[in-house]
Image (cartoon, rainbow, N blue to C red):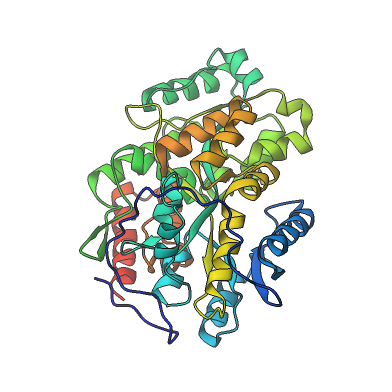
Length: 428
């Protein structure tokens, strides 16, 4: 079992197994008396263009429900990780904060955020959570974050270009996807059929997972790199070979971020690419004419139509130093369930963290929404839920691996180098 490094005196709770029962739903409460009290929440900047209106409505509802005042402080993502760490160490953080999925294990291990397992169980909120988000918030069988919103990557395409080449249909396997790419390349050599984004590890991981591979595996609380095992290497090699052997991409794309690929797609030189569920709304706002041509497909696995795809997003967490844990959890419930969960999802074009709210969003959405939702529900997957992941991400271990392969290093050699570096972080 991982030994906790308790940064705060009131550190995270122990590691008993999570056993959340199917309790009856909570009615939104209002049982906690917050008269004369103030709850502070950190909300990350840039996700919602209507943040100020949302915060106003949320604050009014929270005060009406509890009597307490809500102080929302919007924080930029840039530098946020270090600000969180400093706040946790000094006891200067908020009561509640939006925390990115890949940060939760690190902050929980440090003792900076609370174990919410018992609160979630008591309020009957365990059932119907989006599995990948719940997994991302769980460390050693305990939940340290309540799922709020998520995004997932699938294939977004220009249906008009696909129709022109005669390949506008869902690929059911890697072979189908390769056939589409080859046909697109043969139809118009000026197109970039399927850019391989060297700067995006989350475009590559569905192929590692789709071959049956893993980034790392856990046994008895200890993690070991698996990115250099045969299945993972097969997926990495197949993905990069789309560029190296099948002319799906361009050498310029070896360093492209997802924003670079989107820019090319907007120029209608790229017929299809891997991108997030939030992107169609951006295209709709910037280029309504192109938006009318959009179609989407789930990313296929080696032998099926849906591969695991990284489920990223945020959870709502309670800081350990809060003086009002019950009031703070009332806020977490208000934000992550019901009206405000659905509203946030609709305004941001991300998916909510509960199946009930997700169903409302999907029912009100279009075919694109349904495709991305299928990818999330059938294939949403988390990166290794370990405090070491933040260090691996910070060191760009997997990104360097992908760039190395695109630069000519064999997939096995690049994966072996990455695995060695990962194991060093896991062993710290």
